[in-house]
Amino acid sequence: MRDRSLVNNPAGRRGGVRAGARRLSRCVFATMALASLVALATKTAPAQSGAGITLYGDMKVDEGKAAGMKPISFDVIIYQLDGRVFSRQKVMSGGRYRFFGLRAGEYDLVVEVENQEVARMRVSLGAAGLSSDFQRDIELEWKKGASGAGEPTKKQTLAAADFYQRPPANQANFGKAQGAIDRKSYEQAVILLRQILDTDPNDFQAWTELGTAYLLQNKNGDAEKAYARAVEARPAFFLAQLNLGRARAAQKNFEGAVEPLTRAVELQPGSADANLLLGEAYLQVKKGSKAVGYLVEAARLGKPEAHLRLATLYNAAGLKDRAAAEYEQFLSKNPDHPGRKKLEQYIKENGKK
Image (cartoon, rainbow, N blue to C red; front, side, top):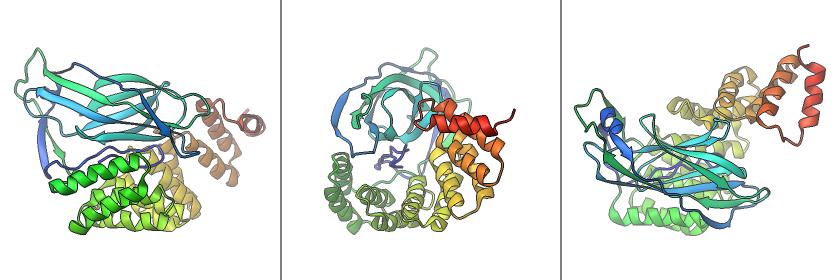
Protein backbone atom coordinates (compact mmCIF):
# COMPACT_ATOMS: atom_id res chain seq x y z
CA MET A 1 0.00 0.00 0.00
CA ARG A 2 1.41 3.39 -0.89
CA ASP A 3 2.12 5.90 1.79
CA ARG A 4 -0.41 8.70 1.35
CA SER A 5 0.50 11.33 3.91
CA LEU A 6 -0.76 13.94 1.41
CA VAL A 7 1.72 16.69 2.06
CA ASN A 8 5.19 15.34 1.62
CA ASN A 9 4.22 12.17 2.14
CA PRO A 10 5.25 9.07 3.12
CA ALA A 11 3.61 6.32 1.62
CA GLY A 12 4.19 3.25 -0.47
CA ARG A 13 2.76 -0.03 0.85
CA ARG A 14 0.67 -2.80 -0.67
CA GLY A 15 -1.03 -5.81 0.81
CA GLY A 16 -0.55 -9.38 -0.24
CA VAL A 17 2.31 -10.29 2.07
CA ARG A 18 1.76 -12.77 4.86
CA ALA A 19 1.44 -11.26 8.30
CA GLY A 20 4.04 -11.88 10.93
CA ALA A 21 7.78 -11.37 10.81
CA ARG A 22 10.43 -12.58 8.40
CA ARG A 23 13.99 -12.89 9.53
CA LEU A 24 16.52 -11.29 7.23
CA SER A 25 20.31 -11.26 7.30
CA ARG A 26 22.34 -8.13 6.82
CA CYS A 27 24.96 -10.38 5.35
CA VAL A 28 22.60 -11.23 2.51
CA PHE A 29 22.09 -7.56 1.73
CA ALA A 30 25.83 -6.94 1.74
CA THR A 31 26.30 -9.51 -1.02
CA MET A 32 23.60 -8.10 -3.27
CA ALA A 33 24.78 -6.03 -6.24
CA LEU A 34 22.57 -3.56 -8.02
CA ALA A 35 22.28 -4.53 -11.65
CA SER A 36 19.90 -1.88 -12.93
CA LEU A 37 17.83 1.14 -11.96
CA VAL A 38 15.50 2.31 -14.69
CA ALA A 39 13.71 5.66 -14.63
CA LEU A 40 10.63 5.97 -16.83
CA ALA A 41 9.89 9.65 -17.36
CA THR A 42 6.17 9.62 -18.07
CA LYS A 43 4.44 12.93 -17.49
CA THR A 44 0.76 12.60 -16.74
CA ALA A 45 -2.11 15.05 -16.46
CA PRO A 46 -1.71 18.21 -14.38
CA ALA A 47 -2.23 17.86 -10.65
CA GLN A 48 -4.85 19.73 -8.72
CA SER A 49 -4.25 23.44 -8.55
CA GLY A 50 -1.98 24.45 -5.71
CA ALA A 51 -1.02 20.89 -4.87
CA GLY A 52 2.56 21.25 -6.14
CA ILE A 53 4.34 18.47 -7.98
CA THR A 54 3.71 14.81 -7.20
CA LEU A 55 6.40 12.22 -7.90
CA TYR A 56 5.32 8.60 -7.91
CA GLY A 57 6.29 5.26 -9.35
CA ASP A 58 6.15 1.48 -9.09
CA MET A 59 8.85 -0.53 -7.34
CA LYS A 60 9.75 -3.58 -9.42
CA VAL A 61 12.36 -5.96 -8.07
CA ASP A 62 13.67 -9.01 -9.96
CA GLU A 63 14.75 -11.44 -7.24
CA GLY A 64 15.29 -14.42 -9.55
CA LYS A 65 19.07 -14.39 -9.08
CA ALA A 66 19.13 -13.49 -5.39
CA ALA A 67 20.42 -15.96 -2.83
CA GLY A 68 19.03 -16.39 0.67
CA MET A 69 16.11 -14.52 2.21
CA LYS A 70 14.61 -11.62 0.28
CA PRO A 71 13.76 -8.19 1.74
CA ILE A 72 10.06 -7.69 2.30
CA SER A 73 10.28 -3.92 2.00
CA PHE A 74 12.48 -1.09 0.79
CA ASP A 75 12.94 2.48 1.97
CA VAL A 76 12.48 5.01 -0.83
CA ILE A 77 13.91 8.40 0.13
CA ILE A 78 13.87 11.68 -1.76
CA TYR A 79 16.68 14.12 -1.00
CA GLN A 80 17.03 17.76 -1.86
CA LEU A 81 20.34 18.56 -3.55
CA ASP A 82 21.74 20.07 -0.36
CA GLY A 83 21.48 16.63 1.23
CA ARG A 84 18.38 17.25 3.34
CA VAL A 85 15.70 14.55 3.38
CA PHE A 86 12.44 15.78 1.87
CA SER A 87 10.49 12.63 2.75
CA ARG A 88 10.76 8.86 2.96
CA GLN A 89 8.41 5.94 2.50
CA LYS A 90 8.49 2.19 3.00
CA VAL A 91 7.57 0.23 -0.13
CA MET A 92 7.40 -3.47 -0.89
CA SER A 93 8.30 -5.03 -4.22
CA GLY A 94 5.36 -4.51 -6.54
CA GLY A 95 4.18 -1.54 -4.48
CA ARG A 96 4.15 2.14 -5.27
CA TYR A 97 5.78 5.17 -3.69
CA ARG A 98 4.30 8.66 -3.86
CA PHE A 99 5.72 12.03 -2.74
CA PHE A 100 3.42 15.05 -2.64
CA GLY A 101 4.08 18.78 -2.60
CA LEU A 102 7.43 18.89 -4.42
CA ARG A 103 8.68 22.02 -6.13
CA ALA A 104 10.14 22.14 -9.61
CA GLY A 105 13.83 21.27 -9.56
CA GLU A 106 16.24 18.40 -9.14
CA TYR A 107 16.24 15.75 -6.41
CA ASP A 108 18.02 12.52 -5.58
CA LEU A 109 15.80 9.45 -5.32
CA VAL A 110 17.42 6.77 -3.15
CA VAL A 111 16.53 3.17 -2.31
CA GLU A 112 17.77 1.64 0.95
CA VAL A 113 17.54 -1.82 2.49
CA GLU A 114 18.18 -2.02 6.24
CA ASN A 115 19.78 1.46 6.17
CA GLN A 116 22.14 0.46 3.35
CA GLU A 117 21.89 2.46 0.13
CA VAL A 118 21.43 0.17 -2.88
CA ALA A 119 20.35 2.60 -5.61
CA ARG A 120 20.45 6.34 -6.33
CA MET A 121 19.14 8.36 -9.24
CA ARG A 122 18.78 12.05 -10.08
CA VAL A 123 15.28 13.21 -11.03
CA SER A 124 14.35 16.53 -12.58
CA LEU A 125 10.80 17.70 -12.01
CA GLY A 126 8.91 20.13 -14.18
CA ALA A 127 9.42 23.73 -15.00
CA ALA A 128 8.97 26.68 -12.72
CA GLY A 129 5.31 27.51 -12.12
CA LEU A 130 3.93 24.19 -13.31
CA SER A 131 2.03 21.71 -11.14
CA SER A 132 2.21 18.22 -12.60
CA ASP A 133 2.47 14.57 -11.74
CA PHE A 134 5.65 12.78 -12.74
CA GLN A 135 6.21 9.05 -12.81
CA ARG A 136 9.57 7.41 -12.16
CA ASP A 137 9.34 3.64 -11.98
CA ILE A 138 12.20 1.89 -10.19
CA GLU A 139 13.43 -1.45 -11.53
CA LEU A 140 15.99 -3.37 -9.52
CA GLU A 141 17.66 -6.70 -10.09
CA TRP A 142 19.39 -8.36 -7.16
CA LYS A 143 22.36 -10.64 -7.71
CA LYS A 144 24.55 -12.69 -5.44
CA GLY A 145 27.78 -10.83 -4.72
CA ALA A 146 31.29 -12.17 -5.06
CA SER A 147 31.52 -13.09 -1.40
CA GLY A 148 28.42 -15.30 -1.55
CA ALA A 149 25.62 -15.18 0.95
CA GLY A 150 27.62 -16.84 3.73
CA GLU A 151 26.37 -17.42 7.23
CA PRO A 152 24.48 -14.51 8.68
CA THR A 153 26.52 -12.63 11.23
CA LYS A 154 23.50 -10.91 12.65
CA LYS A 155 19.81 -11.45 12.12
CA GLN A 156 17.11 -8.89 12.41
CA THR A 157 13.40 -9.45 12.62
CA LEU A 158 11.36 -7.21 10.36
CA ALA A 159 7.76 -6.85 11.45
CA ALA A 160 5.14 -7.20 8.76
CA ALA A 161 2.59 -5.20 10.75
CA ASP A 162 1.96 -2.82 7.88
CA PHE A 163 1.09 -5.53 5.36
CA TYR A 164 -2.28 -7.14 4.87
CA GLN A 165 -3.15 -10.32 3.02
CA ARG A 166 -6.50 -10.17 1.31
CA PRO A 167 -8.40 -12.58 -0.97
CA PRO A 168 -7.58 -12.35 -4.71
CA ALA A 169 -10.86 -10.60 -5.58
CA ASN A 170 -10.29 -7.95 -2.92
CA GLN A 171 -6.66 -7.58 -3.93
CA ALA A 172 -7.74 -6.94 -7.52
CA ASN A 173 -10.19 -4.26 -6.37
CA PHE A 174 -7.55 -2.76 -4.10
CA GLY A 175 -5.19 -2.33 -7.04
CA LYS A 176 -7.98 -0.85 -9.16
CA ALA A 177 -8.84 1.58 -6.37
CA GLN A 178 -5.24 2.75 -6.13
CA GLY A 179 -5.19 3.25 -9.88
CA ALA A 180 -8.43 5.23 -9.68
CA ILE A 181 -6.91 7.52 -7.06
CA ASP A 182 -3.88 8.02 -9.31
CA ARG A 183 -6.26 9.10 -12.09
CA LYS A 184 -8.12 11.32 -9.63
CA SER A 185 -11.25 9.20 -10.12
CA TYR A 186 -12.00 9.41 -6.42
CA GLU A 187 -15.64 8.37 -6.56
CA GLN A 188 -14.70 5.19 -8.41
CA ALA A 189 -12.03 4.50 -5.80
CA VAL A 190 -14.60 4.91 -3.03
CA ILE A 191 -16.94 2.38 -4.67
CA LEU A 192 -14.15 -0.19 -5.07
CA LEU A 193 -12.86 0.27 -1.53
CA ARG A 194 -16.37 0.03 -0.11
CA GLN A 195 -16.78 -3.30 -1.90
CA ILE A 196 -13.63 -4.56 -0.17
CA LEU A 197 -14.72 -3.32 3.24
CA ASP A 198 -18.20 -4.81 2.91
CA THR A 199 -16.56 -8.26 2.80
CA ASP A 200 -13.63 -7.53 5.15
CA PRO A 201 -14.09 -4.68 7.65
CA ASN A 202 -10.68 -5.47 9.18
CA ASP A 203 -8.73 -4.35 6.10
CA PHE A 204 -7.01 -1.36 7.69
CA GLN A 205 -5.19 -0.49 4.48
CA ALA A 206 -8.47 -0.26 2.57
CA TRP A 207 -9.90 1.99 5.30
CA THR A 208 -6.79 4.18 5.01
CA GLU A 209 -7.06 4.42 1.23
CA LEU A 210 -10.75 5.24 1.61
CA GLY A 211 -9.85 8.06 3.96
CA THR A 212 -7.36 9.35 1.42
CA ALA A 213 -9.96 9.25 -1.37
CA TYR A 214 -12.28 11.32 0.80
CA LEU A 215 -9.53 13.70 1.94
CA LEU A 216 -8.55 14.42 -1.66
CA GLN A 217 -12.18 15.46 -2.24
CA ASN A 218 -12.04 17.73 0.82
CA LYS A 219 -14.58 15.49 2.57
CA ASN A 220 -12.71 15.78 5.83
CA GLY A 221 -15.47 14.39 8.03
CA ASP A 222 -15.77 11.21 5.96
CA ALA A 223 -11.98 10.95 5.83
CA GLU A 224 -11.77 11.17 9.61
CA LYS A 225 -14.28 8.35 10.04
CA ALA A 226 -12.40 6.10 7.60
CA TYR A 227 -9.03 6.77 9.23
CA ALA A 228 -10.55 6.15 12.66
CA ARG A 229 -11.73 2.73 11.47
CA ALA A 230 -8.22 1.99 10.17
CA VAL A 231 -6.74 2.92 13.54
CA GLU A 232 -9.31 0.78 15.31
CA ALA A 233 -8.39 -2.20 13.14
CA ARG A 234 -4.60 -1.66 13.39
CA PRO A 235 -3.50 0.89 16.02
CA ALA A 236 0.16 0.44 15.07
CA PHE A 237 -0.39 1.56 11.45
CA PHE A 238 1.55 4.80 11.25
CA LEU A 239 -0.07 6.17 8.11
CA ALA A 240 -3.60 5.88 9.51
CA GLN A 241 -2.61 7.64 12.74
CA LEU A 242 -0.85 10.42 10.82
CA ASN A 243 -3.74 11.05 8.45
CA LEU A 244 -6.34 10.80 11.21
CA GLY A 245 -4.52 13.64 12.92
CA ARG A 246 -4.33 15.53 9.63
CA ALA A 247 -8.06 15.11 8.94
CA ARG A 248 -8.95 16.39 12.42
CA ALA A 249 -6.59 19.35 12.06
CA ALA A 250 -8.23 20.18 8.71
CA GLN A 251 -11.51 20.50 10.63
CA LYS A 252 -9.83 22.72 13.25
CA ASN A 253 -10.14 19.95 15.82
CA PHE A 254 -6.56 20.39 17.00
CA GLU A 255 -7.26 18.99 20.45
CA GLY A 256 -8.50 15.79 18.83
CA ALA A 257 -5.52 15.73 16.47
CA VAL A 258 -2.99 15.57 19.29
CA GLU A 259 -3.66 11.94 20.26
CA PRO A 260 -3.20 10.28 16.84
CA LEU A 261 -0.27 12.53 15.96
CA THR A 262 1.42 11.67 19.26
CA ARG A 263 0.96 8.01 18.42
CA ALA A 264 2.33 8.61 14.93
CA VAL A 265 5.49 10.19 16.35
CA GLU A 266 5.87 7.27 18.76
CA LEU A 267 5.60 4.84 15.83
CA GLN A 268 7.99 6.77 13.58
CA PRO A 269 10.05 9.33 15.52
CA GLY A 270 11.92 10.19 12.33
CA SER A 271 8.81 11.39 10.49
CA ALA A 272 9.20 15.07 9.69
CA ASP A 273 5.49 15.35 8.82
CA ALA A 274 4.32 13.82 12.09
CA ASN A 275 6.58 16.07 14.18
CA LEU A 276 5.54 19.18 12.28
CA LEU A 277 1.81 18.43 12.50
CA LEU A 278 2.01 17.58 16.19
CA GLY A 279 3.95 20.75 16.92
CA GLU A 280 1.38 22.78 15.02
CA ALA A 281 -1.49 21.10 16.86
CA TYR A 282 0.06 22.01 20.21
CA LEU A 283 0.53 25.60 19.03
CA GLN A 284 -3.12 25.81 18.07
CA VAL A 285 -4.29 24.62 21.49
CA LYS A 286 -2.00 27.18 23.19
CA LYS A 287 0.54 24.66 24.48
CA GLY A 288 3.65 26.26 23.02
CA SER A 289 6.02 24.66 25.52
CA LYS A 290 4.99 21.24 24.22
CA ALA A 291 5.17 22.38 20.61
CA VAL A 292 8.80 23.48 20.70
CA GLY A 293 10.46 20.07 20.84
CA TYR A 294 8.44 18.68 17.93
CA LEU A 295 8.99 21.76 15.79
CA VAL A 296 12.72 21.68 16.46
CA GLU A 297 12.78 18.03 15.42
CA ALA A 298 10.71 18.75 12.31
CA ALA A 299 13.19 21.44 11.30
CA ARG A 300 16.09 19.08 11.89
CA LEU A 301 14.37 16.45 9.74
CA GLY A 302 14.04 18.81 6.79
CA LYS A 303 10.91 20.90 7.32
CA PRO A 304 12.07 24.54 6.99
CA GLU A 305 8.57 25.85 7.67
CA ALA A 306 9.04 24.65 11.26
CA HIS A 307 11.52 27.51 11.70
CA LEU A 308 8.74 29.96 10.86
CA ARG A 309 6.41 28.46 13.45
CA LEU A 310 9.18 28.53 16.06
CA ALA A 311 9.90 32.16 15.21
CA THR A 312 6.23 33.04 15.66
CA LEU A 313 6.23 31.29 19.03
CA TYR A 314 9.40 33.00 20.24
CA ASN A 315 8.25 36.41 19.03
CA ALA A 316 4.98 36.07 20.94
CA ALA A 317 6.97 35.15 24.05
CA GLY A 318 9.17 38.24 23.66
CA LEU A 319 12.25 36.20 22.74
CA LYS A 320 12.95 38.25 19.65
CA ASP A 321 16.60 37.28 19.34
CA ARG A 322 15.62 33.62 19.19
CA ALA A 323 12.88 34.41 16.70
CA ALA A 324 15.45 36.22 14.55
CA ALA A 325 17.72 33.16 14.70
CA GLU A 326 14.88 30.95 13.47
CA TYR A 327 14.12 33.34 10.61
CA GLU A 328 17.79 33.31 9.71
CA GLN A 329 17.83 29.52 9.54
CA PHE A 330 14.65 29.53 7.47
CA LEU A 331 16.13 31.94 4.91
CA SER A 332 19.32 29.90 4.68
CA LYS A 333 17.16 27.00 3.46
CA ASN A 334 14.72 29.13 1.43
CA PRO A 335 16.73 32.03 0.01
CA ASP A 336 14.07 32.83 -2.61
CA HIS A 337 11.20 33.17 -0.14
CA PRO A 338 8.90 36.04 -1.23
CA GLY A 339 8.91 37.52 2.28
CA ARG A 340 12.70 37.59 2.47
CA LYS A 341 13.03 41.39 2.80
CA LYS A 342 10.63 41.57 5.74
CA LEU A 343 12.36 38.70 7.51
CA GLU A 344 15.78 40.25 6.91
CA GLN A 345 14.54 43.50 8.41
CA TYR A 346 13.28 41.63 11.50
CA ILE A 347 16.64 39.87 11.80
CA LYS A 348 18.49 43.19 11.48
CA GLU A 349 16.38 44.79 14.21
CA ASN A 350 16.21 41.88 16.65
CA GLY A 351 19.14 39.58 16.01
CA LYS A 352 22.05 39.27 18.33
CA LYS A 353 24.60 42.00 17.77
